[in-house]
Image (cartoon, rainbow, N blue to C red):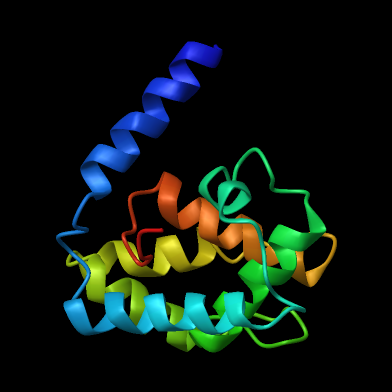
Length: 137
């Protein structure tokens, strides 16, 4: 099981190299959002934890950082509510079959027990479903 997870991670990284569906301006925006969250001591997170998001999905430091990212990207509000219209627009940038966009929005807007966990769940869902609205660390 562990081997399958490692292989899956390698495939995701290999396929995500360059993120062909994400417009360059959005990739740069997300990189700037990440840097802004990293530069704030309250939302800073060790990047090794971020690279292993699934393993650290319950980590509060990761949740705080990922909530910062989601809020600055416009996907969530600070209180943990999802901006569904913005999610639809952002997902629509990378999923060209618009009939699938609403399904991804519903699937990836699951509430966790707190705002940080909700943000973690959203980002994991995007990655696991090959919705390439993210930047590379």
